[in-house]
Length: 133
Image (cartoon, rainbow, N blue to C red; front, side):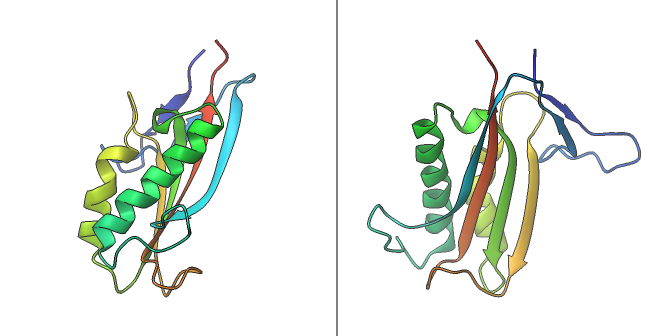
């Protein structure tokens, strides 16, 4: 029993993302709400989007670990980046960590006017699935 990630004919093929994921029955689904580049006190870690991006993904990893999962179990990522931030720096900092084993996960990304946390330049959420042992 595996999670199946598809890049169907007729849709762009990308090494960075898949279009469809099929999670088999019996898997545990874990939802991680949007994480910003903040420390454990809620303070934004830097004004640098790459540093915030790395911390946001690390915060997702901490949340997943608390639920018995890891970044490798992520089926879909949601990434919001402030429109005035350096997209290349933000994505460059997180892209290597978004990829899992095998076919890439699904990724939804958007440039936004702003985020709920003052000073935040990125917010990252995830949906993971852990297959039964």
